[in-house]
Length: 372
Figure 1: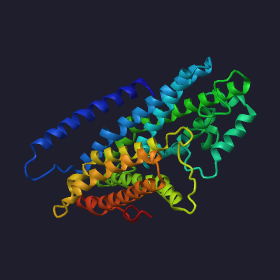
Figure 2: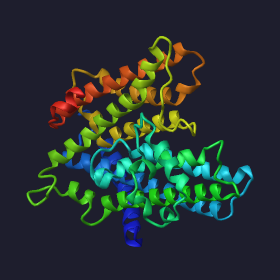
Figure 3: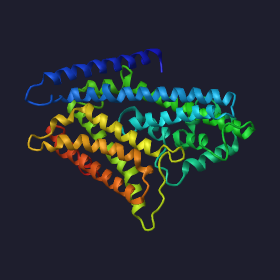
């Protein structure tokens, strides 16, 4: 990330703040006609400058701290719990920041396999652990060189592999033997790779010819978007896809496992670090904030005013239930929460796809309407 790009990112965040202030002012001035309805262009700019770019910047910052913390730790491993706790804090902060944006399925995050390289998931066959252990056994010093991990499998480049190393009870990275030092150096290399990927994602958005520019200036000479309706459709598709992903990869597998006779165990993202619930809650909280940024709530049909209360309440309940799943004392309580989550997600997707998007003149495809 160049100084100029970082400066541009800060400028965009400041611009987003001023835009939000202006938006609030317009809303205050609104009369009995109701909430201000954003144009397609306003909707897209609000989603990008008010949500996407600030959170990508936060991810880059989190990975930068993680990189430096691991580099410092591995240079002089400390046996005290405080030194290890600092790494874990940075790692958990990075997971939370990743949860803020990993629902996006367009733009720089999907290019060059960055999505899979940052976090290889789902991983039902334990590919990350198997491939990582094979590499660790070889102790190839060449893999520790800057950029070397990019030539390896996506499964060993990102958060899943780093979690395995940082949270290992049997082979801690803070040891003084050769194996421990190599594992620590490998963890440091992964953190550097994550920071590089986050920087690429951020630059891919805010560079002069980046994704932000593409989405805010659609037209006949734009290779991706021909008009604002296409960019608005992209923004809303990401919202619907994010809800579907959280259900299919997190909530539904837990529910199916809990309802099985006898109940089954299910592998969860970031289970080793104890971050599964926070990660899911972070995803849903970000999707909720992203929905607010779009301004779609203003498009609730006049004959269905109940939606104005249902939508915010559904998002709020989803986030609260997600963060409490592992704290449920009884299986029945967990099943109840998961069923509520499934109901809320399905309800939100149907309302957004079948009511709000058409009211905003956003035409969605078959997949977005039916979740297929």
